[in-house]
Image 1 (cartoon, rainbow, N blue to C red):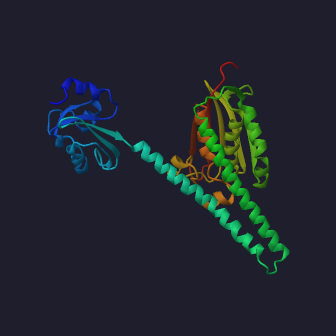
Image 2: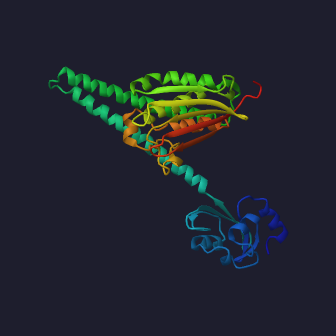
Image 3: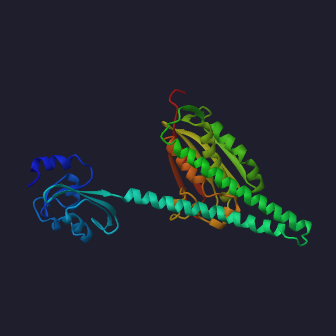
Length: 337
């Protein structure tokens, strides 16, 4: 063998990803990750006992410098990156890296760009159409002119909200590794949010009830971001939880051991179980038409999720159709208070 067996074993055992030493078509050494992936009895046997993927076999047996992206190496769907490096006469180092995370991240990026483009294109098309009508030379009565102007204003405001939410989400993600250190009164946060949403609640014929179990509950956090969390949750509850079933949104603040709990409860239409795992995705909407009509950007719960993660807290959403929705945020309390 061109490479001493002990040296080969030491070389590949230092690698985290699956790695093999192949010589003359035989697997001469394999690290733990490779044996877990391809089988424990692959060392000393023909390479084809370990790898049956035609493209992978061709690349490895060629014995030349090669990088290859492929699917189906270990199972039907998982993407891998195969790397072949000659290390001696008739011998090669073979490494395989799992690309599932990278592929998922790229898919999320593509979906995000497509969704953001769609969300901005819709109001922009409306603005363009009405502006073109206003610019025409033909007569236009005052009522129509006022209606067109109001539509342009509303759609422009909607675009601005989307852009502001996107920028806010980017800032939150940029700070996700910076742990907040201020002591924030959770009851005060709930009351501020209720006050900020009071105008929307009045227009919806909805009341907001704030119940603070202990006025001294303080959590470690960023004041502006925690107010944004509470504001988004209460706004969602008012938009979608006030209706035929109930016209009251309840906001609770309490302490549960080492956690401060913010809970927003509505008795609205509720959310079907198949939607719940996705409601914190960017631009995901249970009812797209209703969400747009109510002024939602589709980013509120995504923002909540990222802020809660930055605060090392947890987010729980419980809902059933016809039984309303309860959203609960748990945050570490300030033990010094």
